[in-house]
Image 1 (tube, rainbow, N blue to C red):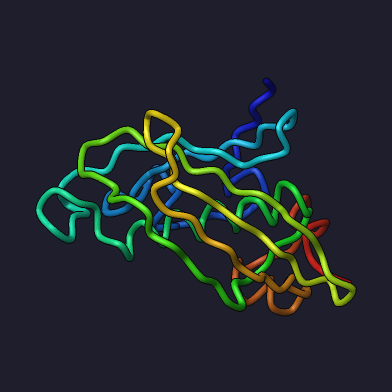
Image 2: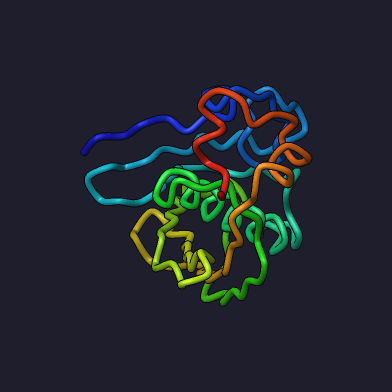
Length: 163
């Protein structure tokens, strides 16, 4: 298994991402990796009580943010594109517990003729059971939109923008 760290700084721009940026003191600080052999984006995480909905369960919105982030990194690492979520759906199968060990996996399921990306992600518990799964359509960003979003499309970042 070959894991490549996925970090915003590698693309030439700073970030204060709530989900993945380790330097955001109020964020989740989840580190994502590209598993090049399995063609998946993955991250292991444990969330504490600051992110609860019910006292012992992680807030569903926080869980959705983790899933969306996994799919966004899948768009970058697997499809080679900075992209925005156009639509998404999720199914909650079992609760994500505060203090529990989980893994999120994001996948590229396809690309339509207009370049839109079909992505999926799942949060798995320590036994490999699916807790929450999501599917989404992402739209690749052009240089203007990417510049507005990340502040630059220079250097390595330029290769991840549409046309």
